[in-house]
Amino acid sequence: MATARRVKTDHLIQADVTDSKAKAGIWFSEQKGFKSKQKKVMECIASKVDWIKLPGAILAISQKPHGIVVIAPNPSLPGIIVLADGTTKSNTEALQRRYTKLIEECTKSLSIATEKTETKN
Image (cartoon, rainbow, N blue to C red; front, side, top):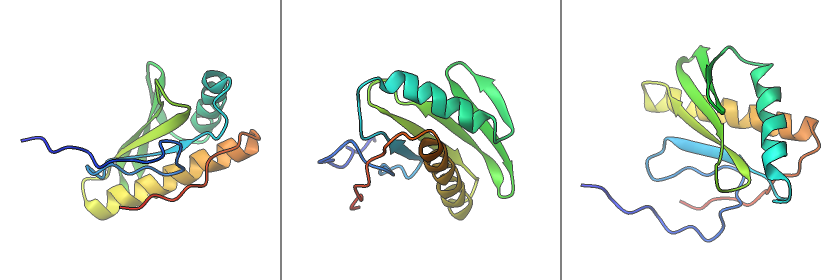
């Protein structure tokens, strides 16, 4: 049976891990024009990883640790989400950290501000 997600007090957070522990992301601090900013960040990420085209997203393939990561613009909020599967909890968490850091690097290199709010689980 499905369980309800925890209550979030701020959706503009830097790294958001849901109770499923399978989603993380970077949220832009400025909402104006976020779709064009999402596109620039996605192009930056695609230039730095091995990936398979998904319409509107990137499927990054990792050999170390083994796993896949889907990186996609959030369709309704100003940010980029990360969905990782590393077959083990530690691999999945490592992939989330690595690709979240990559998004941070791309947003910084593109001078796109991000929120620095911490999550409390």
